[in-house]
Length: 90
Image (cartoon, rainbow, N blue to C red; front, side, top):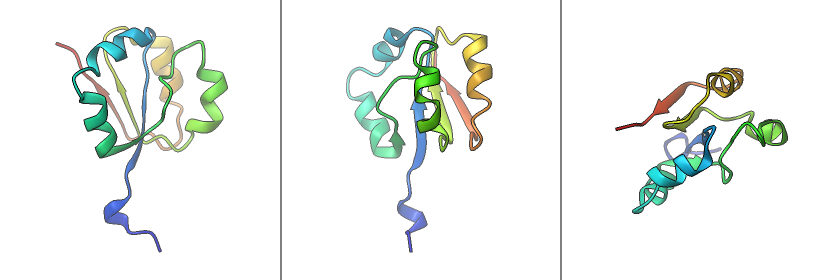
């Protein structure tokens, strides 16, 4: 039986502009995030959404920042297990 206390939340990074995600995940931030969640290895963008859709069905949280389009956000809201979207900006 799986230990619930050690189960990591399934998460993705998503943005309309993938370089925006790279900019905020510098200085060890991505590694710190990976220690907290089970992070999908590919940033989800409009151009690869359909390709990755079958593989991200178990996503529970989305991390995003500047550049998230409304159209992509609406698509992500259709994830069946989605519980939260975290938008970081400064």
